[in-house]
Structure formats: C-alpha cells, structure tokens
Length: 276
Image (cartoon, rainbow, N blue to C red):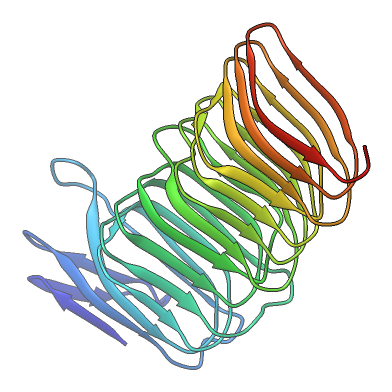
C-alpha cells in the first residue's frame, strides 16, 4: 500500500508506480505479504533529482532501496529485512526489525543524520555509510560496520555475539559493547568512548586515544599514532601490547600479564597485573 502527496499517479503494466507533479512526497509504504520480494524507489527530475519517503511498516521484505531518495520516516518491519540501500537518512528516526533473515541484514547509505537508531534483531553482515552523526546500532552480531568520514557519535551494541570489524574515518565518540569478542576497531581520528567486550578485544588502532577505556576478558593490541590516555581492564587474561608515538597516561588492572607498553614520549599511570 502506497500513500502519496502528488498530482498524478500512473501504474504501468509491469507493476511500476510512476508519480509526477510538484513537491512530491511518498508519505508511507505499508508492506503486506511481500515475503521474499523487495521494494525499490527512485527519483528523476526536479532541481536535485531527489525525493523524500516517509514511514515504512509491515511484515517481512527482502530489500528496501531508494536511489536518489531521502528516508524521512521510521522503518518498522515486523519480521526480517535482508538489505537496505538509501541515498541519505534523515534525523530522529528508528529503523527496526524483529526477526532474523537467512543471510543477515546489510545497509548501504550516504549520510545518516542525528539521533538515528537501528534496532536490528538479526546479524548485521554489512553496515556502510558515508557519514553517521549520532544514534545507536543494535544487532545480534556485527560482521562489518564502516563509516567513511565525520564524527561517529554512535553507540554500538551486540546482543548475542561478536563485533568482527568497526572502522570510522573520523572520531569514535560513542561507546561500543559486544556480548562476545571484538575483532578490530580502527579510526583515522580519536577514540574517546568505552570499548567493552565480554570476550577478547583483539586489535585497536587510532590516531589518538584521548579518553574512555577498554574492558574485556583479555586485550591483544592497542596502538596510537599520538597519545594514549585511557583505562585498561582485563577480567581473565593478558593485556598484550600498548604502543603510542606520543605520551601514555593509563590506569590498568590486568588479570594476567602485561606483555609490553612502549612509547616515544612520556609514561605516567597506575598499572596492576595479577600475573606479574
């Protein structure tokens, strides 16, 4: 079911819906009985070749795609959704699913606005965006999450298992929590949030680490091209390698051994290792 604000609606014999007029807005899509089918919306003409789409709700759908389309409303899928591709995603939105799909959930988007939440009751196989200002991402597990540029003030959570890879082109400000382990966290900017895993944090790399902390059963390596100012806690194993080209100022409480701490600058902090 489609709800439009526009002048003319024409359906051709291939099942496509063509809407023409001024100041067009697709107010809502209600998904009904699509199952393994998908929905695709594209825009052509006008000053910017873009259109806006409002709320999307209903049962399971294989894919949602919007070429040259700005998502301006919530998505509430009472079922599973395997794939989403959008131009941009607006502010203050919630995108949610309630069940898992066969191959997991994937997203490809341009710019994602402020206070946007993804509540995905599925494994997130791939999540990529040009920019993502603020909000949260929740999934059962996360294989890959990548944001190319801008501050990443987003809290990331998994409910059942690992975060394999998280990367950002800008500063990581939000907190990251994994119900399992974390494979890698990488940024070309600063880390100031908390990185927490019930299992192991294997690798962290940043330009600088100005605040926050790392909590895990054990920690493999943490490296910064400048300073490190953070808390390190392991509950069961070692703190592997902490390396900075600048100063290191840390507080560490380690259940096992501290393998190495190296810096080309000054070192300060309080370090306790049960295995030492």
